[in-house]
Length: 182
Image (cartoon, rainbow, N blue to C red; front, side, top):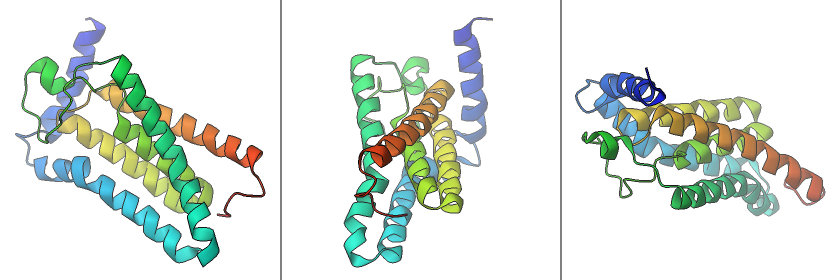
């Protein structure tokens, strides 16, 4: 069995379980499309309510800059190395609207939310773990709605965790005295 056939078989396990013909399709759409907004909002609220007024801006930068850098890197990669999304390659209906049929690898959502989870983990371990679980749920849902292959999600999560960790460590080395406390 070829790697492509294995790739498609794994995809169809998720798509059949969570896709448009599944009883779970509504939940899957929620996690693929709406749950990301909830995570960003929770991070924002967390920062606004636990910081002193003078620390909020620096803390927000610390929380959101690493995921935004990771997002930029994944988007540049997708621009130069387009790869078809499952709905385009397999001619199946996606459950959500996606405008770029060739922006599959790596998943920007998985990368962004994994990096956000890592930055939140450095500030609050318990909350950070929940954000990382959220990143995985978003990734699984995006496979289920037919817009990503499993390898896209795995690569996005890996990129987000590794780069989020590296950016956090580098920023601490460069500006230890200027970083907002967590």
